[in-house]
Length: 313
Image (tube, rainbow, N blue to C red; front, side, top):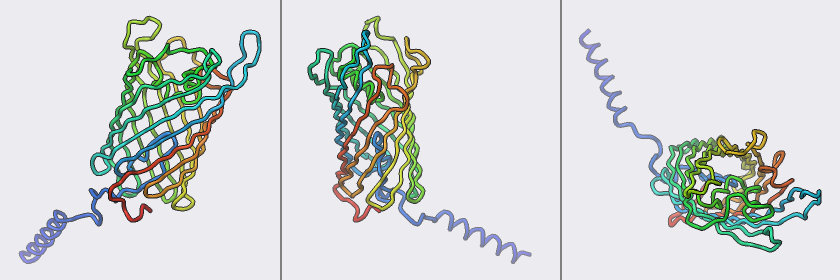
């Protein structure tokens, strides 16, 4: 019995020592153990390497509603540019980002006008593994650094067109308000399939005593992306988005939600990752400010990594 007890103790001691000294088959802190995945059109690759830059140009055609006499105006063109930079700060787990937008389109005075949006800065953190599962969250802020006109502008105007085509980006062009943007991210990769979701909330607080601007508004932004890689360098997918006004004075219930879908095609390489996508509405555009619209956006993405891996696949 004593010999049996000693053997059992010895086995347990050895197993405990192995448990203490156990190490995974890969280095979880190695920055290149995480996969590089095709980013959705409106979202970043959650675990990208080093510094990711994105230059996006959106060209849209908006059909304004008929005027009081029933006359149907001509379609209005708008161009929206977005420059985005996001830096991986530590082991592809902590990120800091900055974005700036500009829009050009026809104004109510029937001439082209250019408006510069307020910048957005954000930070985010996440947990991820090399199998492709990642989840986390962050906080963004859009301060009123660039003077803007009234929040509501007649159509056509560059700001009104931005609100129709990309309502999730309208806080960049809102005047006399500061916007806080908390969000949650989830991503799953299963073989060549990818699912990514971001649930965000825009908390808009006015910074002036203008009674025409509500004290606080709340808007929910949901983006869902389904992607597939038929071959390693190519990613195809479909992005679905919803913008829902939770607290917005003067907005009727039937106008609180707007939906859009965006098919996309992205080329993947260790450095350049360009993409082509479209934006099309479900049902009616926001607030009935337009009858319909369509948009095409070209994105030039790149990853500036001083020591890139030999292969990302």
